[in-house]
Length: 173
Length: 173
DNA sequence: GTCTATATCCGGATAGAC
DNA sequence: GTCTATCCGGATATAGAC
Image 1 (tube, rainbow over the protein chains, first blue to last red):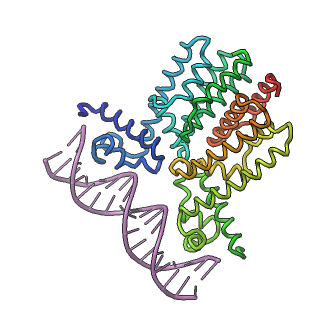
Image 2: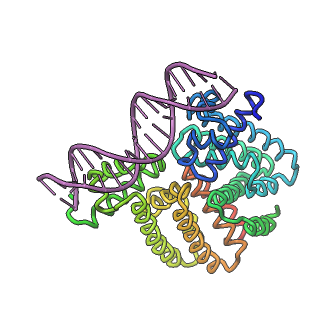
Image 3: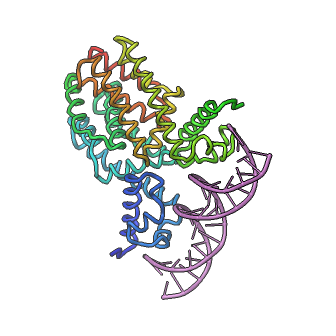
């Protein structure tokens, strides 16, 4: 395994984010990340020279995933807001994992906070453009934030989405 | 200062939560908490025998504050849901500080997660009883969660509340 | 490109003086 | 009730072999 450099780097980022998601910032030590990715700590530090670089790598990948996601939102046409809410409740996608990881990091890392802020701005812009109504766009975004927040604490979201859709229908959405 | 035991304990909890809020879990070390409260680490450990006890103390205090808050919600009468959303966006109250602190802890602490879950359940129950509509109650709660979430990342909420109120008005609230 | 060994530091916790 | 001194374990990071 691990034929080339970029494969291993991706695997290291996957391991880092998974540990962040499952055990929080304290659980995502260099040792743990390396072990999960199947390399030694020295091996990890060859690819990412410090923990800060590992964080940076993860946030950069998040940025790329968000760009892709915005494209998919746009591709959803008039179901754009539904697509947004459905994916807000989603668990286990690469984007979701990166996003949760960033949330963990944001607790004590200014760059992660900034990354989350930019992500929110990007989503607000498409929502607002699509709905043509800042009030509604902000409300839909806050609901999405709420679902993301609950996911963070391992709360099941199954009925939440149904409840929300019921209410959005009353608003003509 | 620090005449009696319970004064110091409260001050230690205040310091703990403030450090949690401002610097995340990693910043809330026993040394830092003690220093901020104006005692030594030994002094802190007299009151709370371990870090786990400090966490427990903070979550217990949160529980008490939530009970009080629910009472105040009920006292708001037919403005109950407005009261809920306004206080969700609030910053700097003891309840708010405790709640953010619990959010930081919840990242890697199961008891904190449970405390947050229970808090949400308590709020949902009053909202649902008041609105008599689970769909609406869940939606309002998610919006509150969203505002809390943004507060966590230091985003200004000024216009968010106004946007939300505009939309709720369309729903007859 | 990955490994081992090691230096250094820091946080939690104990012991015991005051 | 609070303080100082100290121990222990764990985390980041460096050096250098393979």
